[in-house]
Image (tube, rainbow, N blue to C red):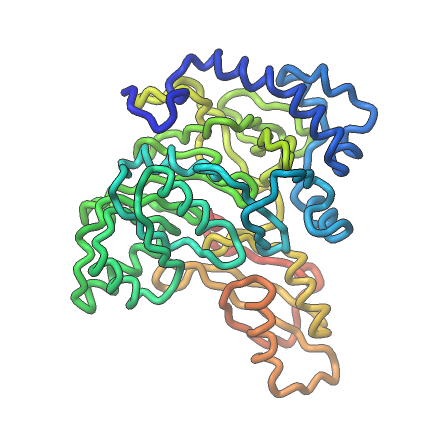
Length: 414
């Protein structure tokens, strides 16, 4: 107990709560004044009086679907941006599409504390298999490791053969990426004889870490912990011990609310996770993640005193996560419109190896005789979602499924 990346992780929980709430009025007043979107959202509200969770709960929720529409109307950030002299370091565009950005400063994405809880220390090397392309996932973990004084191999996803060679060459002690891809790497290493024994820890996110998969890694001497993150905030919460509640990251104000009424729910009750980020250059207030969780009472055995979440308990919106990437029904609708389809449905399932897979079922319009329709749609699906998938030309897609997503995985892409 008591050894943390941030000194405040072990402070009195009441002290942290008072500090967060004391910072709300000034943050909200700034957002209302300089952000066009927040000014419109909080019009007529005296935000200087919002200094409690009850008062915060009276403010409107920022819904991801609305943010997408607002960004389309007022690109690139929907009027939430008020950068001033705080120019972003990088811009991103995640599937949706949703524009994101990050700013200068050590550990902007808050992943360092999660890595420190895992056991990562200065001088170690992280093999980072999150994508550096278009989305912020790669930079999230990269910046956290650098903040700890670690070296990073920017591996990105895919090409397990080369991954094993790099691990054998650079001997990293830790992996970051989706839960199942590390298994793919280790299986490939067994096939080609590459020595990946240097890996003793892994920080995973963006997918379901099953008990069987965690045991697979444990049997190979690899400690695996999860963090819960998003492209808007980075690490929202993280494990400090396997299968224990996740600890909310410092500097974020997290609420768990009823997905319909948006009223706060009691401890232990499942609800939607809302996050307020206190970022005056890009203020997001009561941002609805679409993820379900529950507040777990008590304090973690490790001594960290922040709010605890029961991990990922499902989704309350129609988006699904595939290989760590959210895919929205609107994207399937855009494909149908772009290729003049009579109907389209995206089937999401687990393949024989347990990895996420998807098939676009496409119903061609009457008279459509394109011989290369499957090839065009396959490329279109990848362009739209950033993911590889198969295409199946079907005689009919029922009207109830038109433009929709059918998630056949038991865990919902957790």
